[in-house]
Amino acid sequence: MTNRTYMAKPGEIEKQWYLIDAAEQVVGRLAARIAPILQGKHRPAYTPHVDCGDFVVVINAEKVKLTGANKPRERVHKRYSGYPGGQKETTAAEMLVKHPDRVIQEAVRRMMPKTKLGEAMCSKLKVYAGSEHPHQAQQPEALEL
Image (cartoon, rainbow, N blue to C red; front, side, top):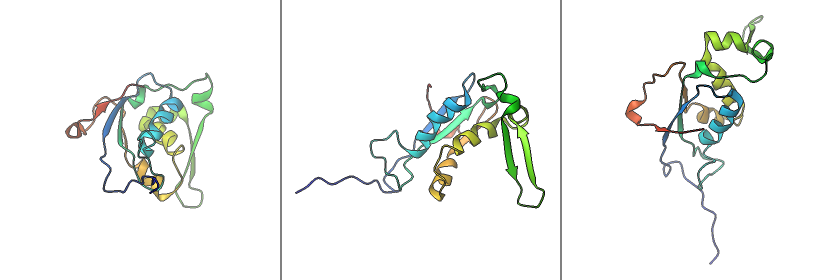
């Protein structure tokens, strides 16, 4: 009898909740640590075609850092409404002031697979600008980076 490769099934995986404090963290390095957790690559039973990842709650998104002196004003984020003339550009400094949670969400989203499964994995990321979050009932485990 030969050994078989274990493939996780969607109902077998127990999801965990992790809490990450983003204060004084560099955006890219933070996103590089969050993306594998959302995909489930930190688990021994990782299966590429199944959502094996865990939930991640990020707090203090307004206190993240961007490396480099020019990056806050030269890094441009584009979005498109779908209508003609609906393309908008904002700098990273403007996004950190208006929507600090989107800076981390976009950085993580761009590191995830560009498929429906990748979208499902991205939906497990919860980012909050301040130190308060509504996920106390899930008892998230603090994760040091």
